[in-house]
Length: 129
Image (cartoon, rainbow, N blue to C red; front, top):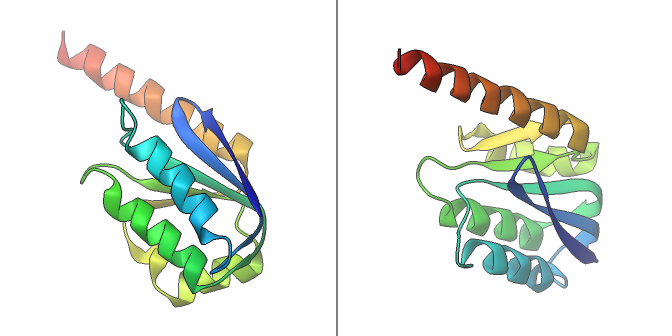
C-alpha cells in the first residue's frame, strides 16, 4: 500500500492505493500526522479510498484516529469506498456520525465542496447587508 497527499478544494486529501490494514496502517497514520500536526492544521480531511482494495480494523483505526484529531466542527470525507470497504464502515457504525461525509468520486467531492463554499460566501454576503 502507498499513499499520496494532495488536496481537493483546499481540503487536504490522502489517496490510499492498496490494502489499508494492520501491516500498512503506519504509512497512512504518518500521512495523517503530517497533515494534522503541520503548521496550519486543517479543519477537514479527505481520504480517497477508490483504489483501497481491503480495509480491516487497522485501517479503521487510522480513520478513527484522524476523525478524533479533527476540530469539533471539522469533518472527515471518504471518497469512493468500494462495496467491501463500505460494508466495514457501515457495520462498525463509522458512517453514523455527522462528522463523516461520503463522496462517490473525487469530482463529486470537488463539486460538493465548491457548492458549500459558494453557499458560505452567499450567507456571509447577506449578513453584511
